[in-house]
Structure formats: structure tokens, C-alpha cells
Length: 377
Image (cartoon, rainbow, N blue to C red; front, side, top):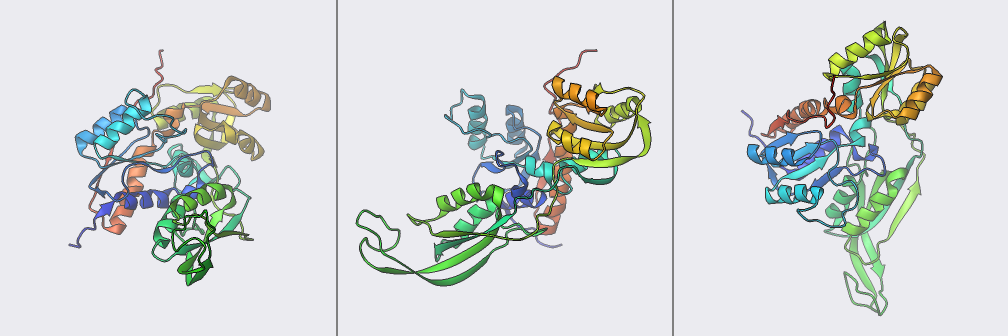
């Protein structure tokens, strides 16, 4: 039997990013490692939808070292970190129990074989394609000069922020060695050398590809990881074609159903207590768009592509009025209802990747999560 490899938190983050590349995330999103030491070893992983206090308690009870979740725990900048704050309490408990937290959110929503592909399969759709058009804002080549010995820290920071993705490959980069020259002014504090003295240093020229919409985030993290007081870098526009998946999916049913019959099928497939409908119960549904969570942002594309129905959650009153006017049916199965398949499916993907890497880890799916909304019939 082949010997099992030891996994660290950084390795688990890498596997999650292979499933849901961080460059697919929205600019406003916060994905990847949120809490924990990337160097810590891992034996067990708990996968859940939300990191609530119950998830931390469950991870601690099971001896899980990492929680992989869908909704980011840290979403908005924290102004304080105290146990009296709900988010602060969870972070405190996670740190006390040495539990790392890794989030895959809108990057998992967009990813190939990600949340919306899982949702489309769960609802029995065929001939499935991305609903949202791939982003068209293109790429830069980012070039940065780093003193020898610090290149790995800088590259890891850029990769974690979404750099280095070319098609199905990630962590793509190139580096060459050379000599950097500089002289600091009298009020400088150079990392190498003395102010006012001409210096020469062994440096590496690091190159990688970055999506334009993520360039500010990647550069910020690159500069933070860089040892120099002033960082020299170049951004070079590239003509690479923009490819890749978008948000949501659209497909067709094996046979057309009435809205009433399809809604009942959705209710059963997603195991929810109720769904809300917009449309006539007897109208025929053949072409279906889906977007897990609050997916009405995809409505215009669903309408443009001729969908008979959009299945999502968090549908607002005026959005429902618009759909009724446009003649498109809507099925609101709830935010939780359209995303609760995530833990089991993510665990399947992680198990497959860990087998390839020969990591001897146990993955546990949290099964006790509940929709905060209660339906009374």
C-alpha cells in the first residue's frame, strides 16, 4: 500500500482552489483561507454551508482541523474582534480550537462542476451551459522584481489572490534571475543596503497572468508580501481570449412539464418544504435556468436566452412582478434550499482530489444545518 502524504492547511486551500479557482470570484467577495495557520497539519475536514457556532462546536467535537464552507465568515472588514460580537465569537472559538476556515463562494458558483452544475444536475437538466457570459475584461501580465529568497512568499500571495490561471492550469508563472541596482535617499529605510549608497542585489523577475478585474487585489497582496520598501512592477495588457464559465446554468428538461408539475419536481429534488411560484400553473416548461442562492442577477440573461423558467432563491416582489410581465416563470426554492447540496458535493470533489494526492484525510459532511426560515402550513 502506498504511503500517505501529510497535508497542511495550505494544501487543502490549494485543493479547494482547484475546484473553485479564486479568479472566478466577484471582486467584492472574500474567498480562500479566512482563519488559521496555512502551515498547520490536517487530519480531518468538516464541510458545511455556513460557519455558525454550531459548525465550530461540531468540528471541535469531531477533531476536524479545517472547515470548508460556502458562505464567507469574514465578509466585511472587521472593526473589532471580541467574543461579544457574533463573528468575533466564532473566530475566537476557531482559533482556540486550532480550526482553520476556508471559503469557496462566488468562485464555486461559477466553477465548472461547481454549485450551479450540481444544482442543474439535481433538477434533471440536460445540455447544460453557463447562463452568464464569461467576463470580457481580459488579462494583464504582472511582472515584479523580488530579491532572491523571497520569491516563493510573493508568488504564493499572488496565487492566493487569483493570479496564475490559464485555462485548466493554475499557479502558472515564469522567473529569470538578474541583478537589480538602486540607491535610496537619505530618508529611506532600504531592505538591502544603506541609504545614499549605490547597491546591487541578486533579484528574480517574476511573471504571471492576472485577470484585469482582480488586478487591484492581487497587486495589494503582492506588495504586502514583498520585502522592499518600494516595489517595482509592470502591468502589460494581453490579447489572450477570455474563456471560462459564468454564473448560473441553463439547460432543458427531458420532456416539457407544466409549471405546477415542474415545481413539485423541484420541491422533491431539493428536499424543501415549499417553493414559491410566479407564472401560470399550466404553462409548459422546457428550457430552464438555474442559479443557486440569490440568483436574480442572472434574470436578464435567462430571459435573453429564452428560458421558460428560472429556479433560484431570494426572489423579491418587484422582480416577481417583472417576470410576470415578461411571461417568464420563476420558482423560488429559497437561498438555503438551492445551496444545501454544496457540502456533500464539495466533499465528493475533495475526496477525489485527495486520493490523487494520497492525503490520508477524513472528510465529514455537516448534516445538521437548517434553513433559518420555517414554513407553517
